[in-house]
Length: 553
Image 1 (cartoon, rainbow, N blue to C red):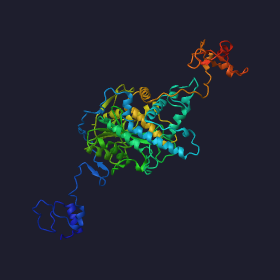
Image 2: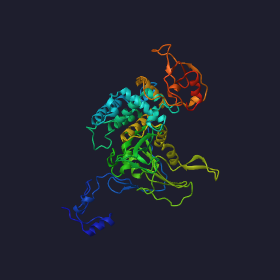
Image 3: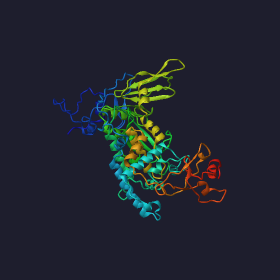
Image 4: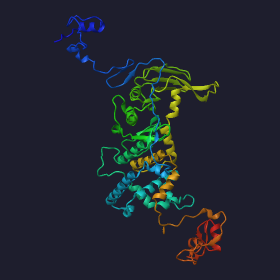
């Protein structure tokens, strides 16, 4: 058995490694195998572990990457990206707007919505003490849900204060399109019963159980229909929600501040949304990677299907770290992004710098940049060299063209895809205020599907209505239309009331003035004449003049 080394022997081994030890055997073995360490040093054996690069160390096993930074020139590696066969993966020739939309919001997804909506409507009807509008519930269908989605999309184009305003009969603000699709009661009951999961079999441990199946199916179609180009970006989006919700987030830098946080992976060239993850706290649907934290794990989870293909990723300083970029580079994926100066593994730069001045530090895998514009900007990249390039802007103080680091120019150009999606959604999004968070999230996913389809919403609505809508029977009752203020202006002439099938040539209608006057005795007087622009039946003599000249008749 090998003799244990004394304290003096250990010090000799450490400080005089070239000297031969006189303990143990007199000579080294002639074989290629290394001599076995004594028992008290057996735990120090590292012969079976992979070698660590000369310019980097790890704080602990599988943890933070700590590179050694120098001022040497940095040459980014060639990631060899194959750009053939990228883009939309659909074999249809000249598809319509409705066909593009149905690539994402396809029939199986809508059939599931129909099934769960009908089930939930009956559950509401059975549990309610006073069924109300649900008492006349009729099962919905695929055609009706597609028509319902068409109406919701139009509401994003035509903004009004309340839902009832879309069915108003006031000539100033009425929109005749909506009453042709649904009655107000039917639309409200569909919105009330809209559901996406069976409550009796739902997994209550899943925060997204109310919408999980629809969300998973929709994200699957997003990934299947498009192969991304080289440049990708990841950023967070915030869906406004101020109600009570366990995973509601507060982000002061966002305009909406409160809401549901979404991590979105976008294609830079087209703005296509490839994948979305909903942040639900500690049980967010991501694969946690040791040493990367939540932000790095989000990146690797979203990029998992695209690692090893030579993509370049752009991220902001919430995600960027030397450890993450080292992981990505080992997976043949480049990265560039702003970075916090106090991130572990970042180099130290000069404290004071003049405007426009830049300092570069490099290691074997990446380049770190500090550039001073109006304030200090820190960048980290594995795909750029230490170059300054013209920005296309003129410095009015000197008259010279402004120059910036190339990584800053590329970051400003390629990082805004998610913000652009939010901007477009703010103009025409169909997301409505609702008491149920999962309904608002569903309508937001409808907006994302329309965005990915690259279509005009007006044409989409027309085609969905033409294909799926069954014309409604005209209303036979209800309140009379509100007073038309245009009756006191313009040119008005009496004309005969068009004949109907029941009355024929003797078609008559009640005179509006005789029936509703407040200045004399009301009477039910029928007449053969009317004013077509006002759509009012009027006696041709006094009543016609009173109606078009008196504000109150």
